[in-house]
Length: 330
Image 1: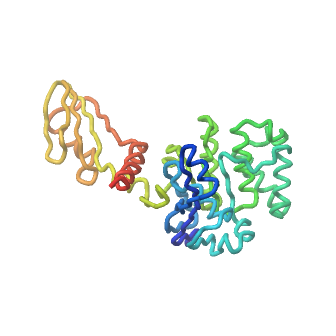
Image 2 (image 1 turned 90 degrees about the horizontal axis):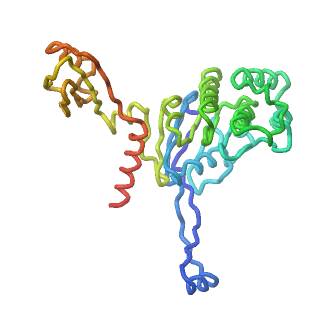
């Protein structure tokens, strides 16, 4: 069942074009030329209940604009959004009751209150029943151990503590859908681990549907079953991470160390380098497995050590961005 449905979504901004120089500055006072820029350009996708989807792209690609429209903060120029069958533009109050949002660079916590008082305030805003509130806070405390800083004023919390507080605040009312915009930005290794653990546990316990925008590709590798890549307002890739890797980089490198210098060829692998007793083979994953290749070569000569090189996810994503740039330059 699709929890999120986006159809032909467009967001345009009016941009004032200003001329440079002194003459241009004077001219700009009396004559203004404007143009419309599409931050989100006719995108469509759907997301099923319980999915964790990475929504990624370079700076200015349209990620945050999309999330703001999905959460009802911003009105689209055209197109339709449905969250559990409800439009956030036409009935934002109903949608918000079933929605959690965390913006990594902007906190929803009240700066002047203790963290616990902020939770109490949200309890009243969302009209959460006492039993539900206590149960949810208990479950979230199991994941984040917020008891140790729940009585500290928000302004005195560390960045990692504030992010954990924001995640708890977003989940207090048991939303079915959670939007996370850069939730690990600026966090250290331990804090990132806590956030990722939270996302996994909430998804597994409650089948929460999650859209994650991030520049940290470690988040994508650890959490997301599906990746949507947006660039210049358009969706350029949509599928599983494995599918994307197979499409962009179908090759792997097998490194074999032998007991003595030897050169061995294979009909379904390319021998790309030989350095004394070390050979490196390049092969397509859809034509032969590493295990088959190792077995075939071991029948010819004994193998001392084996290494396998996978293409880094950073390189895969960078290649996708560059392909889009090449198309734009044509």
